[in-house]
Image (cartoon, rainbow, N blue to C red):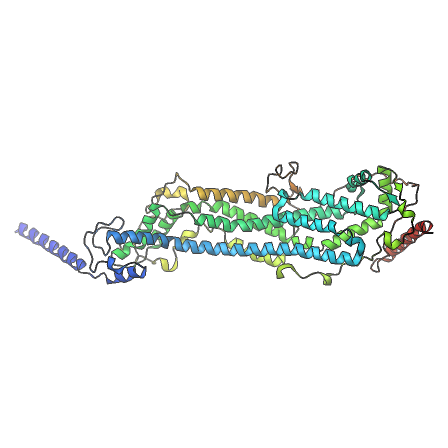
Length: 561
């Protein structure tokens, strides 16, 4: 009797299984046919009814609406589907910072052009023909600044260029205020060598050198950083998915199709493990990426404050004009020091001919700086607005690579709760979610990752980010270390302010030694040609200028008879 009961139970189970198998085998694959066709594949690849025991390579064995050929095509599709959301996020990031780079670059270039036009306009009004005859000096000055912005110390040694500019300007002005003498090349070389000691232009060259160096180094390094971001993203985007990743993506995305459940989406944790395995190398970018972004944000604050390119370039015409006025006002003392150090020059035979003051010296009236007369802001914006905007974007870009799996495995791409595809069936996903990065993938249950072979392209981008971060940190202190300075011919010295203190907010005092001011009695009386006093000058300053003007005319009178 007992044996009969057991036999009866076995027969019942067998009958149920056969019945279930028969039901599956008659189950329609119409939904699969429609979904498969929507991907652009031939609907005739899909069987009308499910196949029992299909020899599939990726998806679970048993009932299936897929053939081996369908599985191969869906594997290729899964590669594209895996890449699509990552490419979209990467493209958005690229576009954001390409646009910001263009905005900053255009702004800095237009600011340079505006500054040159403003100086030319002011100096034509202020100094007339004397400026026009020496305009190439200022044109070369701005051309050098533009070359430095584009190519850095590889093209222009900023310190040397500024020293040469002031030395050349001193030489030209020295001749103008001492027209009664003849000066040979050897004599003028002596004058140029003592430019810093003489300080004929007051403190303007020292301050301008510090301001220009810090502002230019910060501006061009920040712009290069903005340009690097799209480059890194673009190169990382070219990294192909590994075969094991494609296999895992196929299993996650399309094995539900083969089981006839086309609407079933993967469990979130299942998706996270697959994506963290597929994007393991990309996640290793995160540390250097975040360090780079922190350095960009720090330099952006410098651009808003002490290294503000706009506040240096916008009034540069006024600063250089102040230096020229200093030279004119102190020309007698400067000349005495030159005569003491370089020797007494010979009188000029040409000066004995009758010449007017107007023909021999500066006669223009300096026009005080008026904020209302400044040119409009470059590129239709301001540096403050640009930096405020880009700082928000930089902060938003932090942890971009490590959060890619979380960004992809969200929304409509996954199914919440336990009603989801776990890789084998519609059920809860039981495995633990592993961490980001290559090293953590040794225990990934869904993707086979070779942790001993990091991707070469991504490692090269990590190195590029690390190098740029060091340049940004140097620029934060006013130093340019972005090239091999020996190759640039700078004598092995870095170009920069040398400010290695946390506080570069104020200029440090620099003192130049000057020879003692010993009165000299020249063989020929010195003539100093000064402009008439400005209406904007104070009463005492105006009186001194009038006295000097009267003295100059008195000294000149005997030679004009």
